[in-house]
Length: 388
Ligand SMILES: Cc1ncc(COP(=O)(O)O)c(C=O)c1O
Picture 1 (cartoon, rainbow, N blue to C red):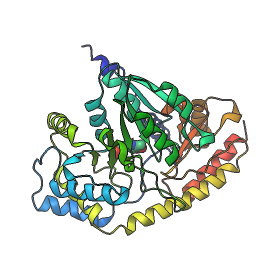
Picture 2 (tube, rainbow, N blue to C red):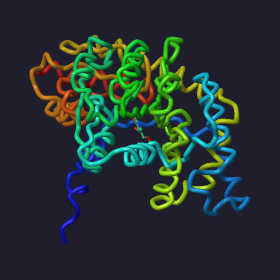
Picture 3 (cartoon, rainbow, N blue to C red):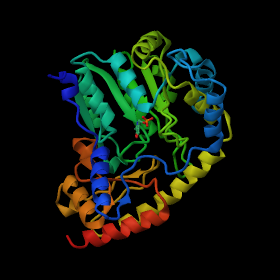
Picture 4 (spheres, protein in one colour):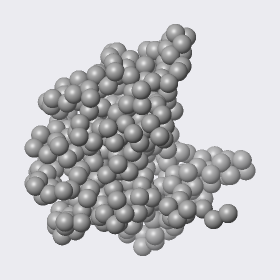
């Protein structure tokens, strides 16, 4: 049976390919250091897990409204208002079973076939996948290393036209860890003002920020709130990747369309997971602060160590838990380099092009692992690269 074009066009995600290769090698007895996984290595804080378990014990195991339980929608609106000095209402919040679903729903609600979408390259692979799925047209804009991996603003302005239906932003970024500065965000807001273009800002790493830096949030720009959707999730901040919960904050004018699409797809997000997320936001935040501090120490460590390897240069990213080292001096493709490092050094990482065409010349390393593992992996990479 022939499957639909909209699914035939989809490609597997790079990280899953590498995981499968690692499993093969590990089965053969090879020791692998894992730098490919984009999830915190800390357990979910116990107060959150307990809230989930208690919710199950209390019988919160039935459907909820598609947009989610009201106490959680309220708490999320409060949190957005507190962190971005806004006045968002709980009616604007839609709970989703993950950040990925939030992206899928937000983009599906906005995009028609042939609409153009401007998005960063390299970037989280789900954006390209959903653009393709909806039949919209990709307009990847390079992120420039010399701009701390913010956009090539000239290319962005050049590609922006009446056909641009959506601009996708992600800061801090997966895969670069780069943060888009406020001046670029304001320029994008200015470009869009008075047009029919929407913005989807994926701020899933907003709390994972270093050097006491004040996070510049696009969602915090009030002037184009009526055309902006925020997507966020609990996965990274609260180490809840397996709980599957995220949300969209959208203008009230389109919430009923989001409600309808949620109704006919997921019906609702797991009820006890919603109670766990409510505890995540309401309970103590000390564990989150400790986790961010630990990530900062790891970033300092890995950036220093990787820059000591001949042929590699690496920026000092301001957020998320990834580095995106430049390996152009080896004159090999990123894919070749990632495969060589996996085979020769036994270190799993991702090639830059797993995140789009402009990722060529780079590798992505996730430092969501211990300093000991980082040290071990970097030593192995150094040894392997010295043979090239
Ligand atoms: C930029 C970005 N957005 C969204 C997600 C999706 O997160 P979730 O696990 O909540 O689906 C990820 C996960 O890696 C991500 O890196």
